[in-house]
Figure 1 (tube, rainbow, N blue to C red):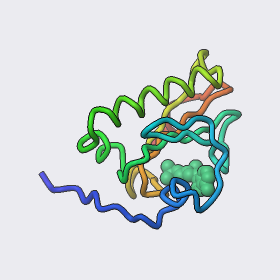
Figure 2: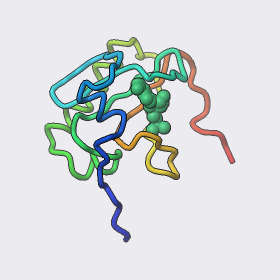
Figure 3: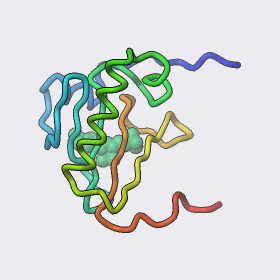
Length: 124
Ligand code: AMP
């Protein structure tokens, strides 16, 4: 098993949002997490939920974040879903590293909804 590189680049755009250097359209802020609207929405609702800690990806966050941060993050997701009336359904996506199509190297969960989301991914 090869070791994954979880080194974190503090100049990434979400780190800059967390430091207050660039604005965001906040949906919800909790002790350890921030939810804000995606700048290029791909659905009527497109929110990004991020941990405040320096984690590059879902697997990094899941492996190394303390329980308090993990719980806070997932409770934040649940609150966002309730606040934005996504009860009928939504899609959560976490693009991870190069092959997964990740552009911003700070862990984020896309929450997409407000319409039928179609098939999971394009078949090959
Ligand atoms: P990913 O390809 O999974 O890394 O997704 C990165 C997402 O971040 C894209 O959907 C972008 O539209 C979004 N994004 C980039 N910059 C900003 C920003 N300043 N505020 C909100 N969303 C952003």
